[in-house]
Image 1 (cartoon, rainbow, N blue to C red):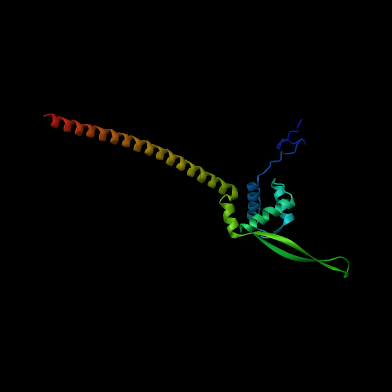
Image 2 (image 1 turned 45 degrees about the vertical axis):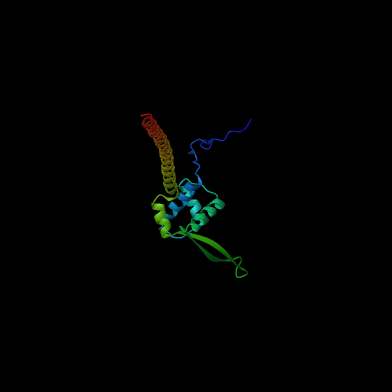
Length: 177
């Protein structure tokens, strides 16, 4: 017997059910978070993760990094590397680490305000549906034109036979007189 997975089932009492978000929704949530938190224009990975968790979108850091890289590829988020110096013990060793900071671009702000990836996908789906409908109508009209051409061809053939028969009949009647 296979176990059944129910995504909205939460066995803890008093805990709100966790909603599972798709990839486009996760992209939208991250870009919306960055757009709505412009008081601090630059955020590190942990800040974004904690902010999303407060809003009900829990995402692992590895997945969040993939999402931010996708947003960076689409030029909606800028990534900045900052070096941070740490001292291990009093003046013994200095360690330099590089931390990533993320900020939303102006294009990202506009894209987020226009509805983000979810809205873009909806528009694309509507356009695909419209094109399919147009193609179906075009095929239907093409079939109708073919039927009309066949009817015209048959009518022309019948008319031609009639006139040929009339000419032959007239030819024989003239010869008989």
